[in-house]
Image 1 (cartoon, rainbow, N blue to C red):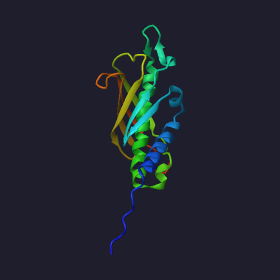
Image 2 (image 1 turned 90 degrees about the horizontal axis):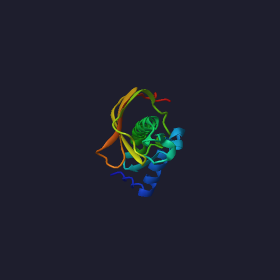
Image 3 (image 1 turned 45 degrees about the horizontal axis):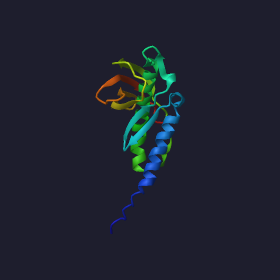
Image 4 (image 1 turned 180 degrees about the vertical axis):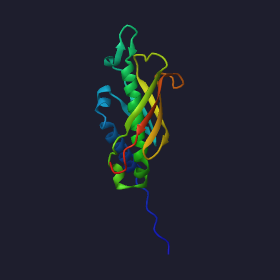
Length: 166
């Protein structure tokens, strides 16, 4: 009379699928590898990590992180968050196609607010998708170092979303 319910996947299988999808997204942006950016995942929430490296210093007299590195860190975080938000629904529903890395959105504009100098230490960032439609998305990103409530930079970006068949 009733249908058999599907047994949930083992947690290791789910975790492995999510981690592989994230690795695939990140490997799609080679500059992130050069900068050393990694992502920590907790459920559907991503935190980007920019480990300190001397090559990231723009002004050795202060010393401060290069503004271009900060901007790239924020933009990369926004792009990965958008890619992740495109993958998540299909991945969680068990859709086989969800493991395929989607075409990445294209940046329309990206505005960075430099709030204070980035110190010579690790940095962290989180992005929030404010709006995501079929063709356009708006994302806000915040970056901090030692204290989450003391941002050193933030950004807002607008992105052209890939067509569904891309």
